[in-house]
Image (spheres, rainbow, N blue to C red):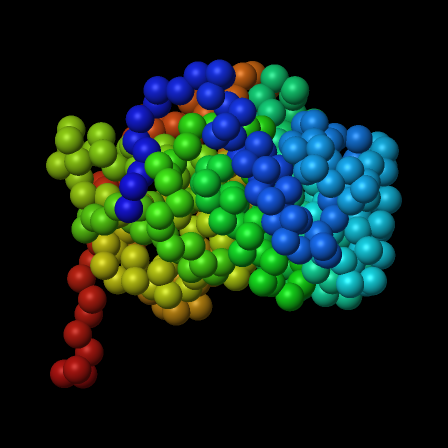
Length: 337
C-alpha cells in the first residue's frame, strides 16, 4: 500500500489535497452521471467546498441559510422524493443543532441523506471550544440506521463519498478543517465501508485509529521501530459504525495489546466501540483508549492542539511505550481441568 509518511507540504498545496476540496470535486463529478444527486448547505458553501459543486450544477445546490434544522429537514424531504441529498455543514452544527432532525426526519425513516460534516474534532483550532466537535461519534453511532465514517485524508474521502451511494440509508462522514497532510499517495488500494484497512503490520501492539490519527500513528510506528525496537501494527478503522469486529478480534489475538487513537472524547467514540467488541468476545488483551480525556478542548492552532493532547506522532509513541509496560498473561490451558 502506498502511504505518505512525509510532512513536506504547504498551504499552496491545500486546494488540491484537502478532504473538503476533494469532496466537493468528487461530488460534482458524480452528479454528472447521477441526476439524483443534490447538495445542500447552511450558508457554508465555500467553507464546506460545495462551491465546487455549485459551479457545475448551480440548479442542484441549495443554500437554506444559517438554519441547520431546516437543512436536514429539507434534505429529508428531497430524499423522500427519490433524490440523494448531500448535506454539508460544520460537524458541531450537524450533530448538536441539527441532531433532532437527523434522528427523526432522516434516520427514523432510513432516508438516503449523506451528511458530510466538516471542521470536525479540534481541527478548527483557534475558532474555539464552541466550534470544536468531539462528541459526534458518540451521538451519531447511537442513532439507529446511521452509518458513521471518518476517512483518513482527501483520497479516502473521495472513496467514501462514492461508496456511500451504495448505502441504503443515512451516512455521517466526518472530515476536518482541511489542512491535514495526506496519508495515501494515490487511490490504488481497496476500500470498503465497514472493513478496516491495515496500514502497516506489527507483532507487539496494534493501534486502531481513524481520521488524522492514521498518518500520525503510521509515523509513530516508524519511530518506535527505529528507536525502541517495538513492532506496531496500525489499523485504519475508517468506519466507526458498523465496526469491523473481525479486524479487532484478529488484532487482539495477534498482538495482545490494543491502543485506540481518536480526535474525539474517549467517552462514546472509537475506543468504546472497540472495547465493546473486546468485551463481547471475551478477548484477552491489554487495552487503552487515547483521545480527548472527557473534557472540553482548549483553544489554539490545530497543530498545537494535536501536540497538547498527544495526538501527534510523538504523543502516540509515548502512549504505546506506556502500554508496552503492561504484562500480558498467556492464554490459560483448561484442557486438563
